[in-house]
Image (cartoon, rainbow, N blue to C red; front, side, top):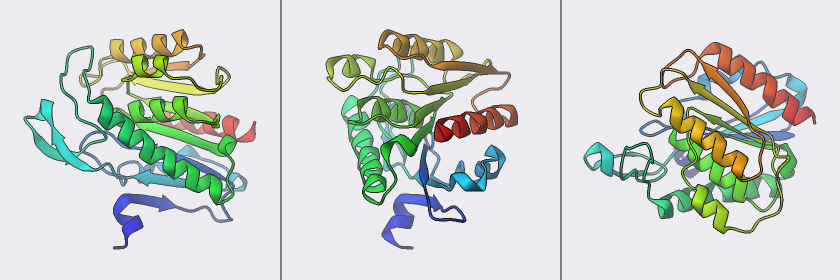
Length: 224
């Protein structure tokens, strides 16, 4: 296994890539977690989308009794406020920003790059996409929350109020409660964004109806 395979999973399109989706997994998972879902997005071949699925680093997670597992950052408390290690969040966000930089350097413009994140990965996707120096094609948050709203409020970055943001959450999610996802939506609105909100009858997972809707949204972002 080479260094790239150790850090991320890559799916290349049939033709040279003209767009890129960077998809971040949740706590304790890996870049392989959402790899099988790509065909169900039903994206047309002519979009020529490259998919990148990074692996989170191994680290101790406080709320899981210090167990070492793949994690984008440490979670310090599991209350509704989701107290997290912001320095770890920023470190992971910087890593994903570097990945975006590499795609741009290789010929894919920022406006054809989408970030998607599930659960903990969604919080990193939010932070990265909102603080990145250029506007991306869009951000999708799946069963997630905005863990860095105070940090984002302190930052100065170009207006991205037109940035497409798509959010999906399970009505019966026992891990990231629906109310936490709704709070994230409200925080995004307070930052000047207009996210699309979707609820599905599911727990902390994804469902086919959600993935099909996500695929349609991706097409609209990359056709814009």
